[in-house]
Picture 1 (cartoon, chains in turn purple, orange):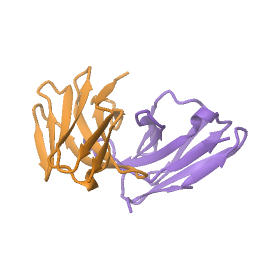
Picture 2 (cartoon, helix red, strand yellow; picture 1 turned 90 degrees about the vertical axis):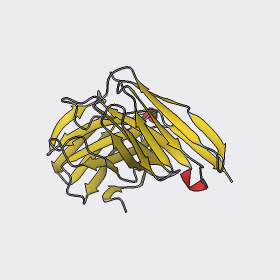
Picture 3 (cartoon, chains in turn orange, blue; picture 1 turned 30 degrees about the horizontal axis):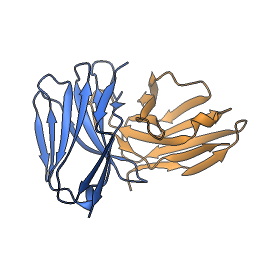
Picture 4 (tube, chains in turn blue, purple; picture 1 turned 120 degrees about the vertical axis):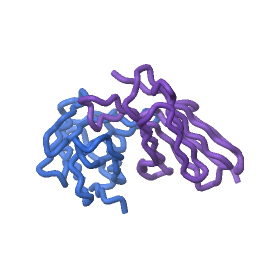
Length: 115
Length: 113
């Protein structure tokens, strides 16, 4: 139990589908993150939210659309994905800007496969 | 953008042998974090180093931050099978880049009993 819950754990979708990944943290944190982890590549930071405001978009294609309605929830909306988008998508949270750089707590991830 | 090189990519050791992974950046870092990811699991925070030349220990694990704050290492003494996993360094440049961690490629450690 990490305090960061991601759903679904596995997702298979076609390139024309629209789906959403969900992340919820129970740690009282104010910063949340989306990462992409592909085989044989470093973890890639996608988005950072601090106190519900997006503070980082790491040149992510527009087919990935994040949403952070509050400090505890983070979504990643997916549409018209490509086969190379198949990867493990990890959500993380930390205490938030203004508290110094803090450890990030990761969820178990969503394994995404694009057909 | 910032790049972090981590070596080696793979390390196979016999149980009881030592293990070291190295992390290098071309730019001066504000701080560096280390994470461990077990097979099939998620990254778990191990430690953060902030000061130049800092050395921290956690049981059999020793973490170092270089004097110039451009490199770091993780050393495990007398490895055990429970040490199996991928070890990542994650660097932060500081300033306005709060939370923006650049991860190294990771070192995959296997330990043979």
